[in-house]
Length: 174
Image (cartoon, rainbow, N blue to C red; front, side, top):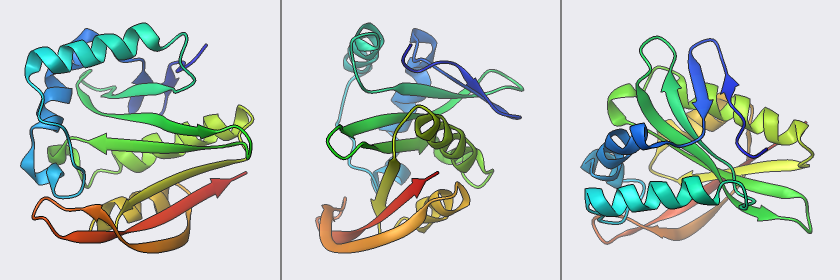
């Protein structure tokens, strides 16, 4: 089964469902997050359609997706997912986003650690992540989750202001 429920001390990672729509919509429309991640400009109806497509594809898709939910109050604060899989070299790429108001609490690194450990235990040799060089918080998240910085490539990400930034690459193995 793809995207099994995973729990940590503070979080529940579970498949997307319709109760996540408001949280995901808030993430997609938070200009503070657009600084580092170029989100599409979707209406709430388009976001609902996207989430429904993700839910319907979960059984046939090779990509796993989880909502990040706080145990204490059942609030969805973000998501984490496998974005790409390289079967030939047995690795995958993981991306995550947490609502800005929940930054600085260790939730992203907690989710990334448990998901990357799950993926490595499931047979992947390596799990990789990347971030805009300007997003120092995300670099810290990856390092805290046990990832090592592998490299940097200049001018790969288009920023909100039309400039370009480099990308930092991180990976984790068993």
